[in-house]
Length: 72
Image 1 (cartoon, rainbow, N blue to C red):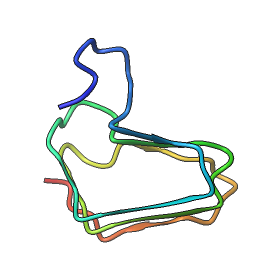
Image 2: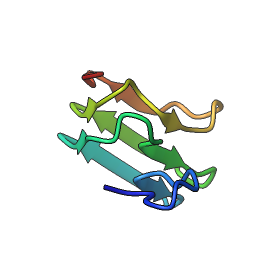
Image 3: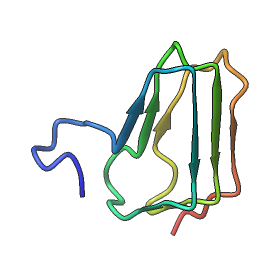
């Protein structure tokens, strides 16, 4: 569980060189799962259970690998 005060805080908030998120179960369907900051150069987000659908905030000008995630 995360963002207990309902401030819109994502479960994972990253702004480093790179990140890989695999095989996680984001159980809170109504909350943002991941926020990727502008300094991230490489992000791989695959094989996760994103209940309620993907709620991932990422810069549009980057070529990240986000796929093969389940919405339920």
